[in-house]
Length: 196
Image 1 (cartoon, rainbow, N blue to C red):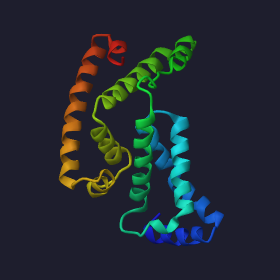
Image 2: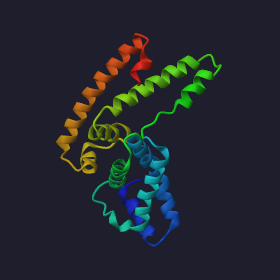
Image 3: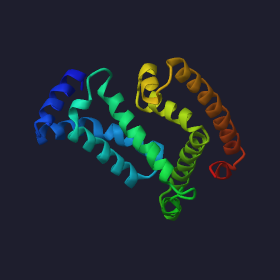
Image 4: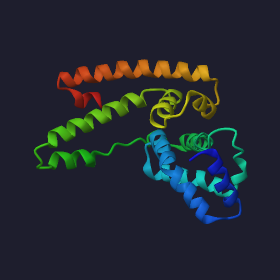
């Protein structure tokens, strides 16, 4: 959805047009949810932040002036809410869902081992991403998962575009080393230890 269409919808939202808000919500909520979920790792909290972010759009649609892409502006609002959520979190709030692994192991499907191995690889990649600093992890997510241009990421992260380039470079190097180690461990049959 281009900015002209977004601005038309925002004008209608300013007149309390619920159908315009639903259209805007459908167009941006999934992408926004994916971003917030990747940052927090908590689906319920991610849904809450998406709702809060879009509620701000409902309350004050005229705040978006069209100086950037609407999605960049929207992610900027969500990013501030994510940072507030991080500040309010307890240090031990990170938890793992062991029930999913138990369900896969209990499966009588012939490919249960392959499913478990794939899940361990995903956990390994997630572990490597989690080892990045917040700025590097967010930068990687915005560029590779959200498809944002470097200038847009710079706007969201409130830094120069060259800083974004540097963050991406260092993040890629760290991810490469971590993933190489993970693959070596997998080759040795000790992938389960790499994901923890």
